[in-house]
Length: 378
Image 1 (cartoon, helix red, strand yellow):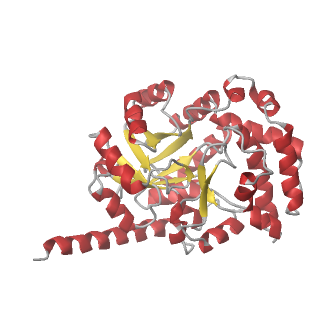
Image 2 (image 1 turned 90 degrees about the vertical axis):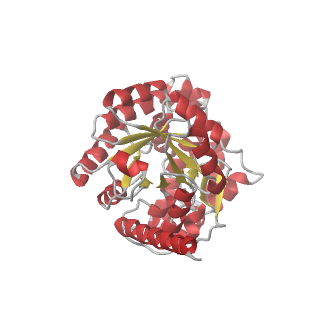
Image 3 (image 1 turned 180 degrees about the horizontal axis):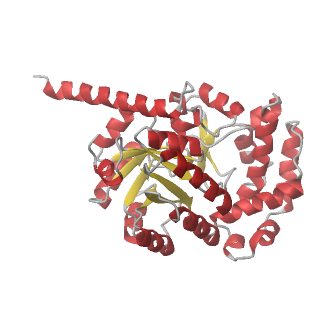
């Protein structure tokens, strides 16, 4: 395919694949697309291991890294007090609510004290210091792109990327966000509609993409949000995008990090089975609706905390829930969920990630042929 991002990044297909799974990243890159590893789940040492593995498996083909750099986080994390400050900022009522939730659904409690400190360490990855460490690790590898999610790329990130000759991408949910991202130094804008999985705004992809394309031209734009087929990729290019950024579609691939119980839920889900909820990270993030999301919205809930405090409360609990769900525990299976977009209704089979790439390209070609036939008709 001949689009600006294909030429700029040296790829065959304008298909960017966001995933927390290194196997998906490598598979998509090796199939002619551009894999992007989500780094927020990793410590700097673990990220180094993951990127070294990808380097070995893509053998010089281009890939990127996405670092979560939220514009706003809870003051306890901004203050530099570290693990103890963040843990102290979590009200006891949230731990009590969580314990009651486990009891209600008959799920064995994890070791709370151990889980608290482990999760707090993960929460530091979305602070300025934590993100900077991940950026430094990423730029020490031969990546082709570094992306900033949830906020304007910080000056230090842009400065370091420029020095390394690495383009900077930024995810946006409004045209005003896009304008600010370009002013801050972003070289590529990902216009992510509300259909997307994970952190997302409310404007639909069909409306957002042309708005952003017009706002930031000539900066190239990738369309994101609910895109899982080649037909949608053709539509995105028709809207003015130079390519697409997909995340959810990889979650039911053979390589995906998705737990078996959640993958089973996704395969059976419809596009109406997702919800934007603050229950996992503290910011609105689209995910499978489950007993977990319902309970955090119930009158008995103390309400989700801000980021990263809600992450500390939720993520250790969700790991335990996923583990117990694999034993067939009905309560854990009811609670289990994961981030996914509305395109989950299109994700009905398990395939290798490379096959998803090839299927999307074939579907794209068929869609373009159909359009060409329409325009060629007398």
